[in-house]
Length: 259
Image (cartoon, rainbow, N blue to C red; front, side):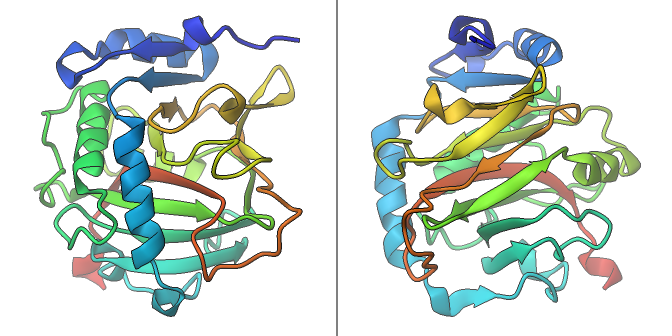
């Protein structure tokens, strides 16, 4: 059974000036997700992935909990296994999260990609193009640019809604909520099994069977989505950056001044 037509959910644009937010958000409204293709060159993302593989060290990893709000406003890695990272939102996962704010050292070669991703987010949210991109705004919002690494050997994220982040943004005064992520890896090349999925008509549909490196996936707060187990025929190993990698540019509030 075909749950969507690629042409119905995918918007092709080569530059931010051509991105039509109304068109994209209408697709999200109808399908609970949309895909933007053409803003990123897969070969450039592949170069950044190679830099990431060389620079991301297991020695820099921290536990799932315990960091201060200020910690993630700098380069900061943590391993999240199980569901204890958020007290009121128990959704098990197995992943590494590497925060790499745009003002921090560009250790993964991702800065220009994060800037483009954040600007695309701002266009979709009807915000100024550089809102919260290079600094913390007066209302406290900043761009939590980060990589999520789901390692071969069972990296996953159980099906969930982005309810906590959505509520947090609403409480902070954000009128609309979207989750925007960029696929850095390519299924079939960097990993063989698993990947991002979304629930459609009660069925978990793997989006990375159709979309890959350079594609942006946009969810709203209604969608149930997650990451299917990555290459479980491998031995789990956080010493290397194997498996699946995605980049995110979410809006976070600055809680560092209250800590």
